[in-house]
Image 1 (cartoon, helix red, strand yellow):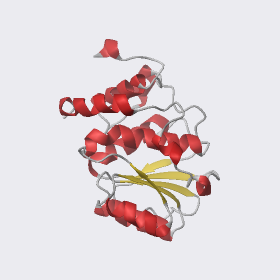
Image 2 (cartoon, rainbow, N blue to C red):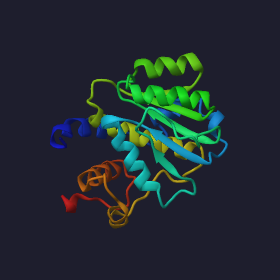
Image 3 (tube, rainbow, N blue to C red):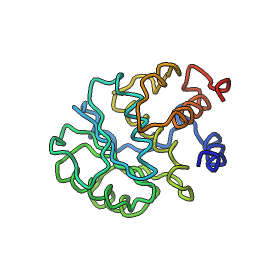
Length: 206
């Protein structure tokens, strides 16, 4: 699977620029969520869910708020107006994500959505919710870097992280737990290194 995504990684290397020109920077709709959330829900499913697992692993010991990756149709009962919900679906048509989005809206959660289009984009437009559109034409796993970096940028813009990320490779591998395979950890570290966000290059590990 990873070898099959090499061309997508190479394409992302050319496109990714987090030095003041991130895809999220052109969206001004983040203002309503700048008041610090008490908890964070990441709502991806399928191939897109890997990014939620990685975000959770990276920040489980770095943030003072809990991060929960939701893969079901329903949000936890505790989700409320103090919860930051990032709903993501590459196609924008994943049933579980759409259901979670509707519940987040009903619960008045601080919500942002990420997709290449589909019903999720339509739902956001109809409800005045910030939607970040990512490029189409990938398989969900091939677009994982977009989900990860946009989520990281969101955390930075609302003040939960001061520097977008600096990672020590030994620490990350040490704290990584199932279901995140080591290959995925190395994959994201490689992209972080490409974008000058990691303090250590993993070239010597591959």
